[in-house]
Length: 299
Picture 1 (cartoon, one colour):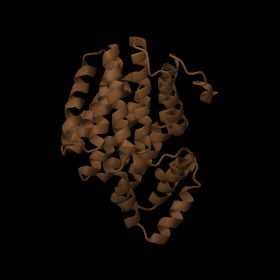
Picture 2 (picture 1 turned 180 degrees about the vertical axis):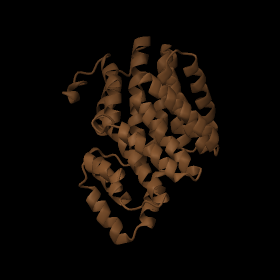
Picture 3 (picture 1 turned 180 degrees about the horizontal axis):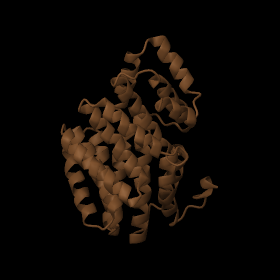
Picture 4 (picture 1 turned 135 degrees about the horizontal axis):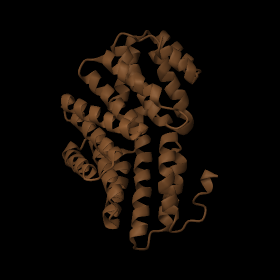
């Protein structure tokens, strides 16, 4: 049913793909989302109207997010630049706010803080000018990410705490999960792995793999690193094994999406366990269920 959404490309097809992009992103249907969105955008290369520009902006926003998930950061930046351009041409304030927010995020992830930080500040201003708490939550989450990346973890913590509060109050679970994930990283940076464990375990409890698989997997990967740093290495390789087993069918691997921190987390877990125990736990983790995972984490 999903795959037929763009079977007859036309002016409405980018709108459909834009609407589906959030589902594709959260459930990890990466290949499907990129394939259909590319086809739909190619079918409407011509034409000039606010309606079409708005549809293209939202479809390209989805392209940026899906490329981010698989570690194609240059492609994510390019798609988000185009999304932002079309949002501006369409006069779509919501799309302009979100595309500015995530262009800043992707630029920061690519190491271009010089370009990312001013855009993050612009995104915060754009979001503050609109009575939409979820947009403010997302913009502060990204600003917190860039504050961390620029070496200011205290500012990052304050921004992420506010992002979590706004997300929770507006019922925006994804932003609460994402802000909590980055906040856990900040706690690690500040030498507080036990606090990071608590924060990340709260996020794991919130994330439902049926509706937000990609977020759950990257948070679990970060949690394994925090546990190993806190001296609770037993079971951490099992967590990594589960992340691999659940991510492989959809082509999602945290070390590609999060190339700065995730490889370090894997290395920390490996260093904390004898090689044979690491491999045995990793294999056991590949067979874990959600309930088994939670028993392991809450033991």
